[in-house]
Length: 185
Ligand code: PRP
Image 1 (cartoon, rainbow, N blue to C red):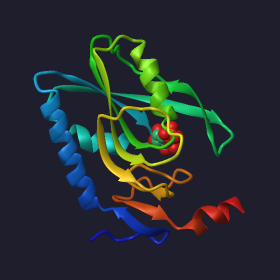
Image 2 (tube, rainbow, N blue to C red):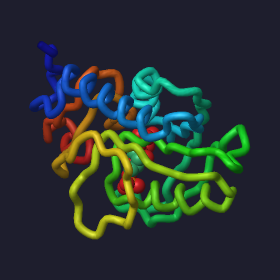
Image 3 (tube, protein in one colour):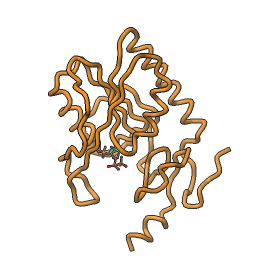
């Protein structure tokens, strides 16, 4: 049983749920890409934990690389214009690229990344997202692998942060409203 952090209202996905989900997704990816090698891209920083666990469940030769991006916006709403802070180290031409994300929210980050990476002539691009939020006006992103459908709540843990904290919680939980409302006041 996970020990709940005092700032967390309730656990949405337990450590056990996450482990089972990642194992299932890894098996599916292993099956789908049988006989091929993968180029797995993680978007820093939130997806790093999910990627680290997922690649250990993929029984195929693979390369890992990382991108860092920041969204231009007003701090509340992203504009959809993404600036690349750290690009991939290696060339993806002719490679089967799998973008690993922790959460698809507005979808603007993934939409931009897919368009941006498609210009580099990979053999294929697919997305594996741990969480898929159901939000209105989401950008059109085709996620080949989705871990969980997720309510539109303030979630933290397993890579997801609030003000850079809580990423190291082993589960995903809903943050107590007083934690973020007290800082905003
Ligand atoms: C989060 C998440 C995705 C993005 C999804 O990153 O890791 O990259 O937001 O949101 P979208 O679908 O609305 O574009 P964030 O910018 O919070 O940075 P982080 O990964 O460093 O936490």
